[in-house]
Length: 502
Image (cartoon, rainbow, N blue to C red):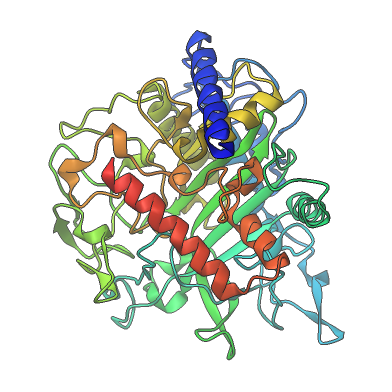
């Protein structure tokens, strides 16, 4: 009887939210920036702002009260502006790097810093953590530690590079690192302690505060890239381990980055992603193929048709087609078989044009500067339409929709790049279908396909949007890493099956 009553309440909540949403008037067509703008080479107004440059002086974007998000009617453009500015801020060089030290075994030792260390690798600004939000013990002479190689998703795929792109015709494994800022770490600790003490129930409407930030970054050994191309990548030294015991300081190149942060009125986080220019082509939906006239890091010269390049075979432990990974949709914006935009909950082509506009503008400004960051691009972001809702209602949306937050059909809440993915991190989960022909608006895959307000143990709260917090909470309750991974895998299998059946 109790479960039935709870089900009725949640059904009423979802229907109420949908009704309120249908009554709102949307104003998503504006592409005008909210502050000073930069201009492209022909003088056309662009979405990037003049005070973002030079890169060394990029300010942290405004996110809280009196920011562009502090309104009941947002524009599509401000989410893309936040995403690019946040990436620029995170990657801007820190010059006083010789002072960076960490405590190892009771003594202070210097980290490897090289030249122009980006802000996100400064341990005073961002903390490297593992998948359970536990601190990663840094190693002397290295800027970061790399152990994790397994991608998200039930397939548990491992990404390897195209050997023809390297100097020695050798394929290398892609690794991942995770970071949180002090705001998110402190909030996570408070939530954990409150839940353990019983002062906050596991089912709750709490959310991470504005400014909370989580990053996932993909890396590969420098040897995977030919000598004539390595200058186009950001490189540093990482302590790399394949068994978690023996570490070797290795030069590595940055491939991609997820930038996930909370802004005013958006407890679901904005989920933005960035990639290097020379990794993989986009799938051409009109011609039904992905192709490249030259070798790329993840795609061998030539072409492929269908999804074999982004499907992981659990039996062979390899992709069905090697070195043929591609971005399923350019900027994560869904296309149909004719090459046109799918009809979804996100108005197009406004969203697509905004992403293209801001990429062009940022690149034009970075071309004037020395450094590798001009060779990275913004591949889109996803968020939820919370316009006109109170903070409590925003949390209720996330909890009420539970596993359906990722829905992309018209009248749904998801906005932005509705098939948002990073070719280095969700290589094998860009779709849940087994053929290109079956991909449609009802089964698109995106960050919210797995990240929703449901914990591994089936409680509901906006704080469970973060998987690393969910794992952090379970670790605090005494569960082992193996048990947490099993729970996570079980949930991912459920989500995978659900999406395959759609």
